[in-house]
Image 1 (cartoon, rainbow, N blue to C red):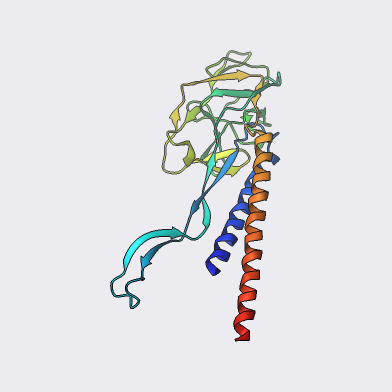
Image 2 (cartoon, one colour):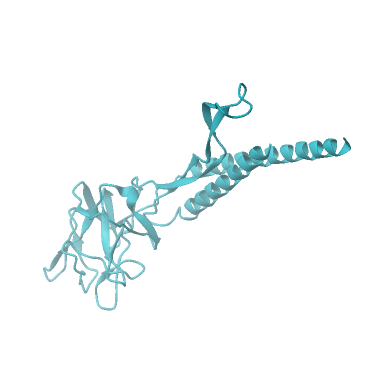
Length: 252
């Protein structure tokens, strides 16, 4: 009975975490290039079940299997699937069609990666993200455009009116799930080097929309609510049973 209370309580905690994750996905439906995440739960607290029927003293116990007592959050999976491309007709908006990430420079000098190509120029004429992080070219250098009157081909080569050209640094990784979200639609990775992407096309005047499916997320919310309520009712039932048992024992 006590194990049942523990199992149901852990189930409620998992559903609460799932609800937080779904809420975050829904809150970022309009965030350019946002990638939805899925919380993965796994059974926990495995315990062997031993046969004591023929040996009450416990000298010759035989294993008859195992069981788990509850679930816990195991991992967070990011869906890097392609979002829809939305036309903006802005010359500094770029969308990646296919695999790959833009490379940007962080204030500490390290690199981060993003799919969000809604860029602008800073006061120095450099191409930066909407949050002001410099965008890097294929050589890891900042891109000094000086003007937004530029053209770009599908390989990511940006051409200025005075015939200067820069190639956007588009990279990818073998294991995308190793990328860690740090906010501002940016990702970092440890222990893995970026590789030059090749299966992509750059679309100037477009941005990639979020890949969150609102209908799918709302269905998940309903499922989570029902699962939470089921665990809640199980706890209430076990609590009532324990209360009756205590009262009956107290009468003896």
